[in-house]
Amino acid sequence: MFYLFFESRNSKEDPVVIWLTGGPGCSSELALFYENGPFTIANNMSLLWNDYGWDKASNLIYVDQPTGTGFSYSSDKRDLRQNETGVSNDLYDFLQAFFKEHPQYVNNDFYITGESYAGHYIPAFASRVNNGNKAKKGIHINLKGFAIGNGLTNPRIQYDAYADYALQMKIIDESDHKSISAMFPACNKTIDLCSLKGGNECITAFTACTSIFNNIIDIAGDINYYDIRKKCEEGGLCYNFSNLEKFLNQKSVRDALGVGSIDFVSCSPSVYEAMEGDWMKNLDVGIPTLLKDGIKMLIYAGEYDLICNWLGNSRWVHALEWSGKEEFSKAANVSFNVEGAEAGLMKSYGPVIFIKVHNAGHMVPMDQPKAALEMLKRWTQDKLVGEVAAAEGMVVEI
Image (cartoon, rainbow, N blue to C red; front, side, top):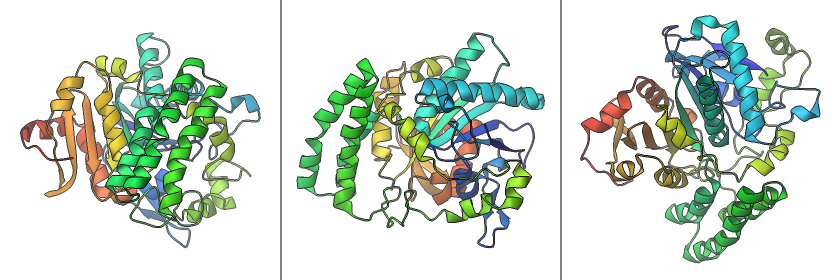
């Protein structure tokens, strides 16, 4: 598996943070160069420092996964993963190898972060690490928490939220909402069968449920479903990320990275297709055990993202069956402030924090880099919970 590691610009004692990009099948180099890495790519293919790179507060790992993504490859087709068991085992093995190679970071706090389809990867990976620690096998990994940005974690709840969010944001009208909502029972039935039987039932669920989202996009036209304030540019990601492939496919860069003649592709169609049967599975099921074991969770979402919108994310977090469910639901919504200005709204109870980020779409660290870096700093330093407690009683509509 291919990875890039950047020591903290602040202190080697800072936490080790791993970032996973979603897709499924999209390279973490997308985040590295367009969101929260140390560098951005200039049009002349030179690198510029990012003043808000997460390496300012952490020792930062980007890994291309599952196998077949970015520069990670295998000549054995059996290594093309189709479920979270395979994905999380590979990532756990990667971490064991990483800490064996870099033992000076073994005692640092460790956090798992990522966005989008990483809403599937992250809970499975966190559970795998936690279970490995409890079994006392391999190197103990000092897992403290996991963060998911605009993720897909509980599809049944999140797909049900599509029509409500689209109506709320005036993407569709009342009649559209009624007709789209009529598609939910069929979607939910297939998700239940996927959960019960697996296999082809999960492919059926993928087809039935993604038709809900596609219906909304057909109505919305050329809207950027990652940021509804914008138009969707040509290409599957609705953004122009062409400089990434230009930069990483330069022979000098490939040679420097040691990847030889491998062509870099931002997002792998083969990995995407292989994971279609995983798409509609609920990955929040392992989270209550993680919370019980003292591992904290941050869920954040930019308010202008449609595809993994804040409303669906808020609903699954509120529905999560854990010991603090009732208290979290009753908790006040307070301002998340950055340099005296409100950058979002948050609520917290115990190890759980939810933040709705203002003026951001799907890629929060790209749209609000300063706020995203502050969020990471204050979360890993346990300051966000204190801020929520200090503002208790200041109820804000969210």
